[in-house]
Length: 224
Image (tube, rainbow, N blue to C red):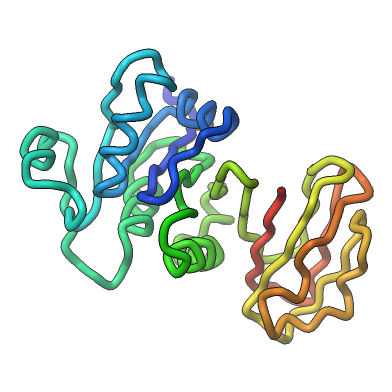
């Protein structure tokens, strides 16, 4: 019987994780996709993660950062997409959502590090994916996991477990959005989201945090 609780990891070409949690997600994933040149980092790290070199299930992107030699060697698992409207991370998410049966969760690994503009762009895309792929209707969640913490997008009122003392930052591009918070040290209902720093560096004072939206919108939560 096909499982309907499958996880996929998408390896991006940023900093490869050194801590155990993101490596555990890689090790336990049902499906692994590398974005373009991230294949090299994945193969290099796979020995320490799995105890042997392990090939991903798929490599996707425009192949601008993967050498012709590597493209030839791994041609049987490569999907080349030349269109430049979307980056390789988005192409990988799109493929996973459309092709992995029973998918319930996607973990993005390697979204941070390297160029700062790439890091910011990849983080903001998490919010875009919730509406681009209608993830709520599909029952699929996406998290970006780094050595420093976890980011996930929300588009309406939500409760989540994070543990007392954990640092919580909230970002949104919507300056009409009001978020009433429960379980955080500093209240957020008077925050005007007209710049990205406005609701950062908060802290959980309860195990469960509740964020109440005044209307459906887009926001990004980062837990450290």
